Image (cartoon, rainbow, N blue to C red; front, side, top):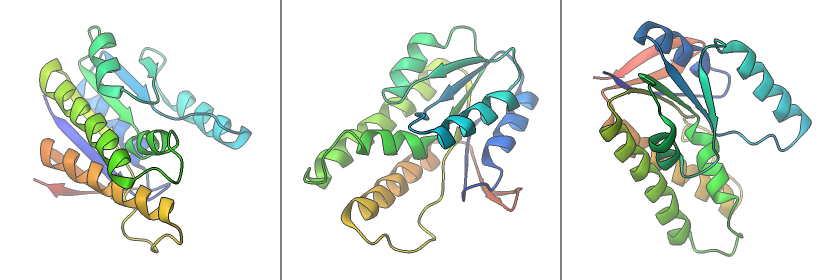
Length: 179
């Protein structure tokens, strides 16, 4: 059993690498998709990701309460891919108005990540978690953008502490940063 976090920038090869790792770890695989198709371009991206996955893999589409949903629907899966934490945090943030206090939203994100960690620790499956590294770019120009960056950074740190391996994807190449 291995628990792995894959981080990196947009289009750095994170999802492709996650698929490769899952194929090496074995089947059955449960693919957990957190994306919402809010527009045509996003719908096309989701379809592209779906075509890249083996047809034998089960897919669970869930936008929040990921840990609880996996626990309830893991079935016989030996490998779980969660793609991705970036959109999960976005989904949570989107439930609140810009006037909501940061601590309220942070508590919700932290609770979501803690529930996922609890799921990881109690299912016996290997987990491959995909997320974006957003702390290396420009400081966002508005409060919600900065809050999003901060919340995702905290979520990534919490997950990185719990997993066995962490990879940073750079130009399609995995760089192992943990252990």
